[in-house]
Image (cartoon, rainbow, N blue to C red; front, side, top):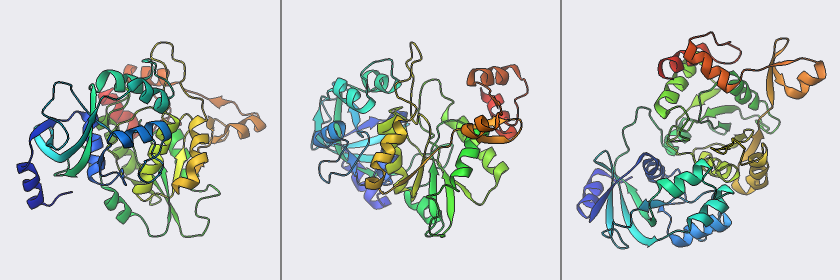
Length: 372
């Protein structure tokens, strides 16, 4: 981030401006605060190609899950290498970009390698092919002022300074409201065999993404409200909360790597890999694009190189006899899992019907009833 004096000097030298959309704003903010470290700006073509083709930064050979790019319209011929561009959000400058490259990307190749498919039935492919402009530009980014949001997003430095020294920090990533099964999952992760092995303490960092996701997901500001009421209700010293201004790609295994990299920069030592993490379904037939354990297996494969330990999420089910237990344990004891589908949950919300507390926290349900 620039000092006020540096910021004014940078703005005075700008040749033109770009008004950011919500997805671009997330990337600019994360670049500005060092969350995408070691990146210092949007990727140039060489770096983009290296990440797309090999999932690595060419300059260092470090793993990097997905390309971080700035897209521009063909019509913006005023934006080219050597130009300095002010990046605006709702008319206010948030960063300055020094452009050093401009090219036409091979989007079919990008989507096929990063998302595992180039089908427009995939929401991430739709974003790349239909939302992003025709060309990409690369260059360094210097933050001017963090955007004003409905939810406070602490920087990586602020989060790291707030964490207990030397303790294991288990990151829980989510993009939806947290229900009872999620809560049970991340609380039990604190007792995983590879957590707190040296007795220095442990804590879970609930770190939801509050940027754009799939079109049918609950809006970020509403998700934020559900997290805040749950944080107050839980009030557990073993649970810390922070919010991430990240735009989801629904890229499955490659996005799992992206999330682990990000959380390492925020001071985490462990990462909970959920079933079908960052997965998505076809918008036409509902078929899954990834297997239920593809992201888990991919993350475990690369965890040592990333310097992050993985905590696979338990397959928990609710039973009337024993509350939440693993599916294997329920099967061994002959307990029948009680289920409530997402479709039925949403129907009950709209109809004002009671929602069982084994499924969802009352405080979260109250927020959702007001907005969904």
